[in-house]
Image (cartoon, rainbow, N blue to C red; front, top):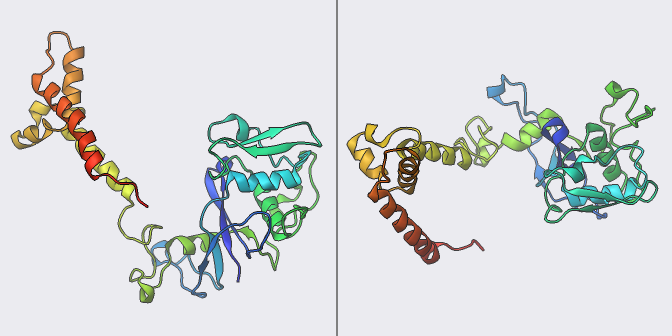
Amino acid sequence: MTTRLTFASLIFFCAISLAAIQSASAITIPTVPIGNPGNGNDPLTGNLYGGVAYSYRIGTTEVTNAQYVAFLNAKAASDPLALYSPLMGSLVRGGITQSGVSGGFTYAATTNMADKPVNFVSWYSSIRFANWLNNGQGTGATETGAYTLGPLNPDGTPVNVDSITRNAGATWFLTSENEWYKAAYYQPAAQGGDADNYWLYPTASNSAPTLATANGVFLVLLFIGGMAYPLDKLPTVLEEIAKVLPAAALSESVRGALTPGVDVPGWSIVVLALWAIGAPLLAARFFRWEE
């Protein structure tokens, strides 16, 4: 059985996934099994995507900066293949620094970034990382294994890039679209999945994820908070409800303070004061960190 992990690369503005067999090597990548080989494609894609004929595993997280640092320290002391991108150390979404001179480069994850997804990784570096995993990590080769890169240009990129495909017997590799799609959406109806065996969202649900719901609540509060629509134009009931919300009180206070000839309404100050006192008390009484 093969397994897959997720590999983030912002150069392509996407998450690249890898598949692999677990090994007790320098870095450990947790995975989960994807079974039910021979499943059909998702009807909502016109029966184009989701079917995979074999079992495999997929990583539970994206490849982290710490994991990629291990790769760099093993294979990029001089870095002729440009496995390291300067953007990793210069931009806020990076997370890896390079120290020393060519021949003795060392790499480290920046503060609080070790467990964050690695970014700014090219497709070439992604398949070289897969080859390194495929070959046992450590001093394992980067040019053969799951993929054979062949002759290289002076900048380290393959000459025949269009001919690079997954080799038979590969254990760690980039996913196909079907492999990724199945892992994200497929669950047989007989095992608690949707009636057509595919969920609408990769959260094992047909309901929009929480963030979408939260955005909807935000829009409602924006509407009745006096920021996108004047309070006095709302129906009376909504206006009275809005006046006890901090969003409306704040917007009316700011409007009164910044608009010449308009006073800050007294009710808005009272509401803000009550929320400023009450909210911390309620949080102290009822909020608990999850264990």
